[in-house]
Amino acid sequence: MAKDGEGRRFPTTPVPVGQLIPRLTRPAFRKRSPAGAQVMADWPQVVGPALAAVTSPLRLSAGTLTLACSGPVAMELQHLAPEVIARINGHLGRVAVERLKFVQQAPAGLVRAAAPPPSAPLPAPVQDRLAGLPEGELRDALEKLARGVYRRR
Image (cartoon, rainbow, N blue to C red; front, side):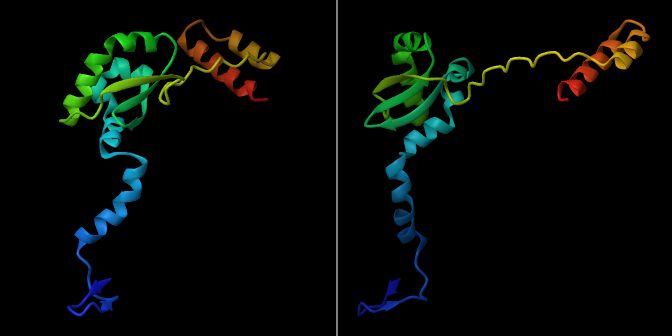
């Protein structure tokens, strides 16, 4: 609320946006620093597609960037740590990351390939119709379609 010269408050008086911003951003910045948010948003551009595919940043706190990675990637990243830190700080334009901490877990973007569903037997009339078609791509495509249809039954 705005105040007049005597300290009285007027609820309908416009308030400058500059007064509202700290109140709005303080809770968000307590949870995640602006530098941490930028690193997380720009992670593939910062470290490149190869490292971004096997890692993901979790949090940036007190100069320590926590990275999720799986298995032997942590060992490789320990050796690359100075280069990765230099890339991150260069991207931010200031020294925000001093050390890396590794947590062994699958990164959020890493999706494991699902096992193919078991093949379903086709009904005899469908098999007979497919057998009557000449060998080739059309027959293969129709057989694949039929297996997909009858897999769900």
